[in-house]
Length: 153
Length: 105
Image 1 (cartoon, rainbow over the protein chains, first blue to last red):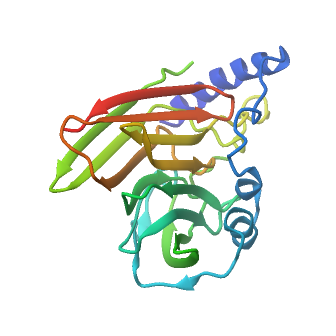
Image 2: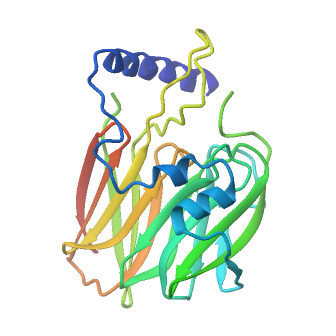
C-alpha cells in the first residue's frame, strides 16, 4: 500500500514539475471565489475570521457531527454534519491540522442541513463544525483519535 | 494523469432527494515529500464543487487540501422529482475541471 502511493506520487510529482517549469500553470487565477486566505490560515480563529468574518460561534446541540471516535487511518475519516437549522453554510475545521479549514459548503434554499464527506487528519484533534444560520454562527465539536496520521511525512 | 471521473447516485426518499457523489482526484496536499529526492510534491486538489439541480445551485463546496483522496460528497435537498437532472462539476487548483450529470432515481 505504502509503496503504491509512493510510486504514484513520484510519477504525478514529476509531471507537475515539467508542466510548471514550462509555464503552463497559472493556478488560483481562475477561482476568485475560493477563499484562499481562509484555507491558508494556520489557526481555527484565523480561518473562521477569514471565512465567516467572526470567531465567535455559539455552541449548539442542534448540530450533529457523525465521525468515528477512533480513526485507524487519518487519511480517510468519514464525517457527516447535520443540523435541523435552516443553514446557509456548513464549514468543517480540524483544529490540529496544518491548515485547520478542511471544507466549507454553501447551501441553497432547498438544501437540507446535511453534508457528508471524508477528510484527512494529521493527528488526534477536535473536529469543529460551524453552521451559519440566520446570519449567526453556531458550532459543535467532536474529538477524533487518530492512530495513523493522514498527512504523510 | 488521473482519469477525471465523477460518479453520482441520486435517490428520492419521500420529498427529499439524497445525492451521493464520488470523484477521482489525487487531492495532493503539497506537504508530502518525495522520499527519494526530498522534494515536495506540489499541491493538487479540488477547490470548488458545484452541485446543480435543474440549473439551480443546490450546494457549492469549497475544499482545502484536507479533503481525502478520491473525495466523497453526499447531501440532501427538497424539491427534487424523479427524473430530474443533477449536475456535479469541480475545478481544482490547477484549473482543471470535470463535470457529470445523473438523474434522480
